[in-house]
Image (cartoon, rainbow, N blue to C red):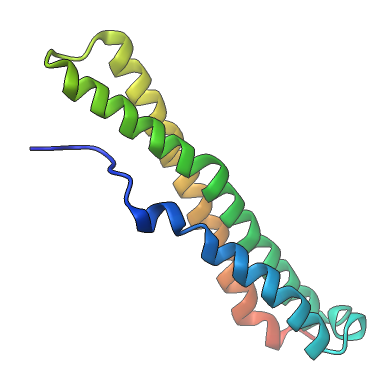
Length: 126
């Protein structure tokens, strides 16, 4: 039985989609909404806050979650290839990386939920 992360082509390319949609969506949103007039309104500020929260979630995901997952995969592969029980140092490192990954994933989830809520209620903000 094999446990751990395996880097696949789709995982390596997945951060491209959030980046491209951000860079394409921001100018389009600004141009189609009348620019600063709309962004100064209640809905505009709320949609903007939701967008910033979503971008923050993407940044945390790419800057913390992805590298930590790669480190976990590398460590897991090294432990499996060693053919011996893991050393206490390896176990401590693995647990530390797992805690970091869990914390980052929870933060991303909170940011995405807040972004979704902000965008859902934006049209009702005066």
